[in-house]
Image (tube, rainbow, N blue to C red; front, side, top):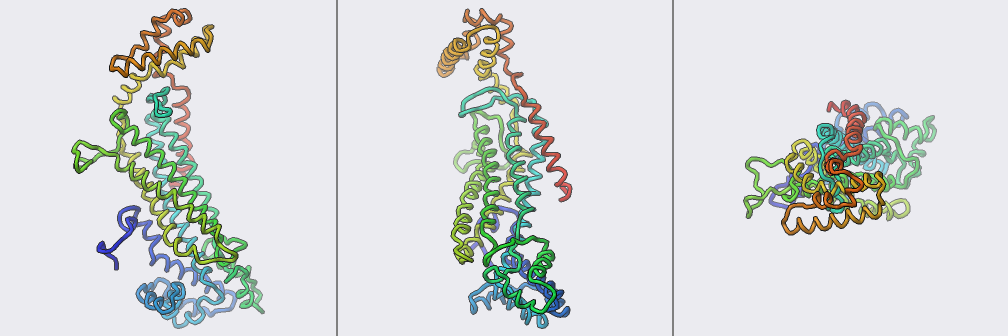
Length: 472
């Protein structure tokens, strides 16, 4: 139906997985709508409102999606749900005449939307579990490898490669728990009719021992969903906002990881880098380039994802009284767009974590180059423990450090070690051998290795068990 001769969203073919695209496809949407209609028919049959053969007829044609016929009808009636309703009814001569009895469009579409949200969230949770487990493996293997930490984009004290990776894992584990909570708390509209009162269903059930509440409960059980206790014509659009905020938070965590990787891949640092294929081209003009294209894509798509909750906020806030239709058109775009973007982010991040290169030589060189500066805090603590005045020693170390920086900026070797050895006030408190030992910063790691391993264990404990349910 569509070709590259007309505009296609890059999410139609470039970003996201086929699995996620199928969830948000128009055909799947209509299959879910028909699933909802059939669940309604089954519940009404149990209440004595429909005959079993009518339900069986609807079930037999539940998957006979005919988009062409529905489009023909929609051109006349100007209502996509009515068009699909008529298409389904035409295919079902026994069940068609009683299809949609008592319902309004949102009774069908909103419950179908929540089924689709649930399926999409399950895909993201599986992807995120795979990413977290890959991160845990990298954390464990590099928990004790010292490297230079950076604050304000300036060299700071040492940390470990595993501990830095644990920062990302900790954020992503929180995102995982948030997604899981979101999945568990998704609510459908239920059967509440045109303005949420269920008046048509109350009328239908007059004289029946079954109440409208019981009908809704049975209907939702067939769908495997829980219903909001109170709605207008639609379920509260605040739920969409919560969904997009949670996805946006995931995007923020992945953005930080990718942005840090871009910094660490820059040649002046050169500690981490993306995988680079044998025939990969970094630039059409500069043959030597190895641009961090995967990390840049993550940051680009995460930036887009971060903007979508504002639209959902407006839909929730501007849902005037029992409903307006000004959310409908944009929801067709923002919900699939958000999930496809998140899907691509997770797929790309998993490749980076599994295949990224750690340059051990560059890590050691940077630690050696700036390690003496990083050792000044360690030195300050020992000077005070030996009886020196903390403020006076801090000023001495500051002057020596800034003087050494100027020498290095001029292209000369780092003189900080010698300046410290030549300072009689410092030497008065610390002998030469002790001074040398304190300036070896590689062991000044505190609890970093221990805490990194703890994060890895937590990931494996919380995520590993659930991933087994998915066959991961």
